[in-house]
Image (cartoon, rainbow, N blue to C red; front, side, top):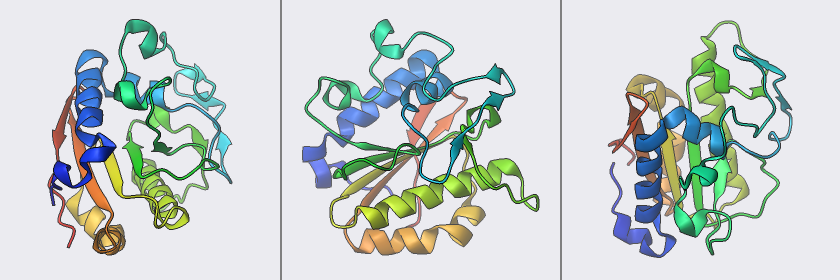
Length: 199
């Protein structure tokens, strides 16, 4: 379901989506993701010490920070110095709850910055997506009553996987008033609304 942006006009979701789309168009999803994934890992996870590109620290990009290039993926409202606040998932969960949250799902292995107990039965990319969605659902529980809107940006979509593992819970949250704005990254450089069947 594609939500009506006017329902949460006061949260500046349209501005956020425009800024994200422009940043992804300018530098690509991977660099935007890398720039936004700062802070400490969530509880119960350790930062990975190695990736397929060698050692990398959490929040340490391989290129200059995007703000230094004049690129603000969250728009001026939600960037440092702006008057807006939002939670980014995955990320440090020990933060104040905000009415707007942003979930980023990047299926590229080199961005799996947290160690999780991999189940060897499933592909790691599938497990990573499952873990991020589980973190998002945990955030909705922990911040119930505060979260009014969730922007979900992902680079891969599997309808069967989503319906099997997440649709029922997210539909329940939608019935409780949380609005979901799904956005699909295509060709690593383009952001488009994604229609998701939440009842």
